[in-house]
Length: 173
Image 1: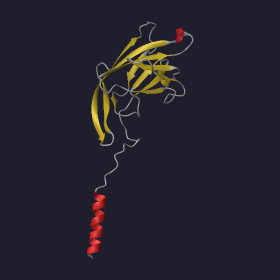
Image 2: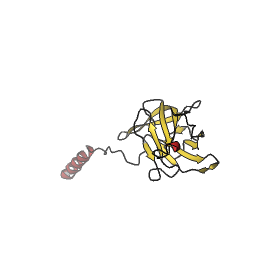
Image 3: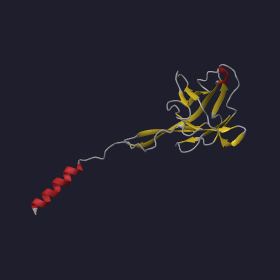
Image 4: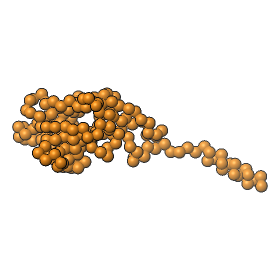
């Protein structure tokens, strides 16, 4: 009987030192990106596909070109916001790389927001959630070369950016 008790105690002590693996599951939601959907200004209920749209973050020399193969779908993109600042600026360049430079058009978009760090887990750490400023969520300007804005209207669909499952901004052009 003493041997069985000793065996049970030995097994109990052996497994009591084990810890759960601290691996952040790939399906765990981390800091979300801003989801933007594009709409036809002439038919506002219709999503509009964008081709050859390049988005360049402020201070960067290269951007992300969204074309048919890299869009979430033909009319939606997701872009990251800065987690260490309360504003992020982007250049939205339509028809980027087109040989006819008259078709290339650049607009600037500065997004204003507040940030909140939320604890996810020991393995994943913190994520940052954003809330667009209720008074001035964005500032939309033409690029340095004034050629009229290609973005004609911007609507805030959801000012709380805590996941990537819904559209946050709608851009009409």
